[in-house]
Length: 216
Image (cartoon, rainbow, N blue to C red; front, side, top):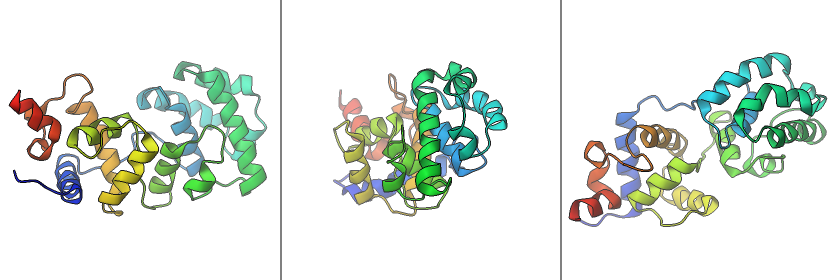
């Protein structure tokens, strides 16, 4: 097909994935903003499925930011041990809860700038929270997003923050959050890291990687 602009490519990608995965939801299980914040912290270098196995007991034991702020780090470690990096994560959760109590009245703030002041919370988690909880425009740049948007031809870098702003320029603000959720699903099912199934991909017609594979 003839050369397309990044915004045109973004619109095509949004529509293709919307058709493939109409239900765009976060795969972490949570019932309130604090639970999503903690679950996302636990998901670093760990599968969402594993996190969802751990959090019910954790959230039954600790229900509020105050509960977590007063918790013994060692006790939290016992609940989350199977998530990996559990010592660092447990320490971050307690520190983060104290910061929520001290600086935000025990409530989860609704801006990326405020969220990223919390222990262990980077832009990926902050975007997820403001998008899923507060309904704001968000671009969650995880490994699937980095890989697939690179293959599509939006960039050739690994810097998550730079990629976030590249995608903010080309994506419809009302679509960006759901688009990122769909990238995760697509990355697991089709555009896998080692052996992407380009012949099964709904975006192959406008994907730079797929085009290059065809010409090999």
